Length: 349
Image 1: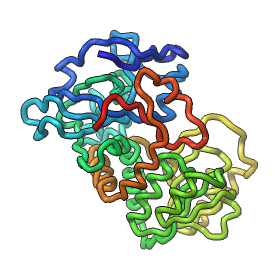
Image 2 (image 1 turned 30 degrees about the vertical axis):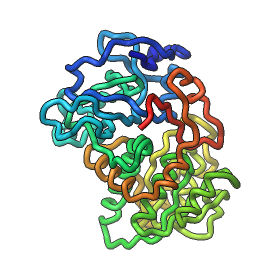
Image 3 (image 1 turned 135 degrees about the vertical axis):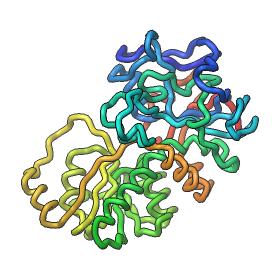
């Protein structure tokens, strides 16, 4: 069968090539790939910035945002042939640490977890793949190819769960949320914010086009100014850019007793011209909370599936701005400023 593979830490080593059929030891459920989402992580692995092949191998099958159709459910999975499923990405470490031992592998404390398509386990960019029943999540069939959005939705489902848990450290009635960034994570985070009944605001650089339209279609408010120039103080800020200046301004703009959740991963860039001590003083004097959030555990995947099932299908469909066949994967890795979610499509639903 064909797959998109890469030699980790070797730039420009990605190729579409023949690989062996998935081994039954990799999971009792055999799945036909339908679509795989492409994100910045995939681009950085192809650029040679990180990634780890399975032990004893030199190449890694890419892809962690999956959608597939069950070919063989195997024994005891509760699935049937033809079901649409996605595969959970992370696996607990073998020790395990206290968090992994109770199923909170997204909070792994020793870093020995593994991840499909990223760290030591082959991903989902292959014509067929296998998965263990405990890491398979059934998708509402009415979503069709939109089920490929489940992985990024699980990330924001976790972020929102933790925001609300942190906020409940004291009496707290959040009303407004600011989402910085209008990529897939930002827009899906805004979607879940509207489902919570909050007054949602999204801030990004684009002034026209699809991203502002999608925000307004949610009933949310779009801003293209700086965080500092906003005329209100949000109760929650979901930071999805990883940009230093945006983060710094967010910490100064958040309302008293507010919560800032960082989901964006930045690299380098200019140092914000705001004294760190001033930011710290603001956080202290307003009883603010700042935390980072990445990945998701099984609970968040199920919450994400429920959120997508409730969402407007036509709105979700507009998030997918480009589809490429697997043999044209290089085009999928080259995204332009108007792209939101790029998908490599292996088969029709």
